[in-house]
Amino acid sequence: MANERHNDARGWEVDSSTRQSVHPYTKYSPFRTATSTTAANLLAIDRGEIAVNWVTNPRIEAADITMFTAIGSAISRSTAQQSVGTASLLTNPANSAAGEGFYWVAPNIGFTVNPQHITVQCEVRGASASGSVKIQITDASGTELATSADTNLTTSFAQITASYTVAGSTAAAAYRIYVVSAANHNIDWYTDKIMFEVREDTNAVSTYVDGASGLNYEWTGTANASTSRKRPAMSVIRGLQIKNESGTSAEIVYVAFDTTASATTGIPVLAGATYESNFPVDFRENVSIISASGTPTVSGVVWGVNG
Image 1 (tube, rainbow, N blue to C red):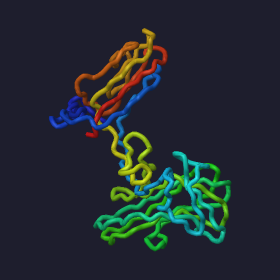
Image 2: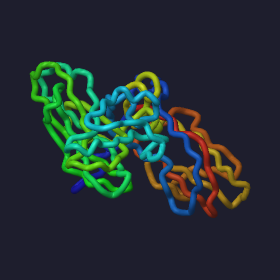
Image 3: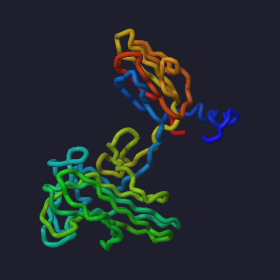
Image 4: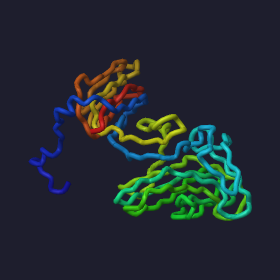
């Protein structure tokens, strides 16, 4: 910051409140990784984006695909190709007209005086590098409200997206996702990672969410048969347990909080030893590690909260 001075120091740190000091840990980040003589972060604080996916079988892992409705095509669950998991939705267009594929109907979007932004996304892959598809947002009758650009199919998965803003004070209504051929063709394609989200804060397309995407992701009910969400990640580091798995005495690992680890800034963890913070700490930037020599493996967990 330009012209920053020493008497600005009161703004450089956050004093933990009594409430924060007794807050139970609600976040964790396990690790097992090789270190090196170059400092690296075990964890860098990033709450990440909070997002919700309304599609109930978004990665087509469940055998039940009745939430998707074929239109001018035949659809089936296929394990031949997938972007995530083990399956995707195979679409075989009838080659009679453009607009053949499938659609999914969202629950009603409720009334609010604020604008609401619908974003939809999926990934598609052609059975061959030919033909084109698009993703659309429609009203409950299938009237197009927004559409993506036409996407030429290739033999790799590619993301397609669209967005639409529901004006404030619009009556509650249902909307649809359509994934359909952009022009008449008979090329089969696979669809995976289907997402429908409604937000009031932004019309940007979120990173894809489902309950099996990793730490801080969860299904709201039965796996692959319910909506899913991305919870905020850790924003305050409150504890650390780390074991140096090396048996070589020279392979000391140095651990540092909110700075870059080195032999002078780090807490030494000797070969075969474990360091554990025995009182709740309060750091808000990173946990950094570096080895004195070699590439010793470290394992453990960072504990924290979403402050």
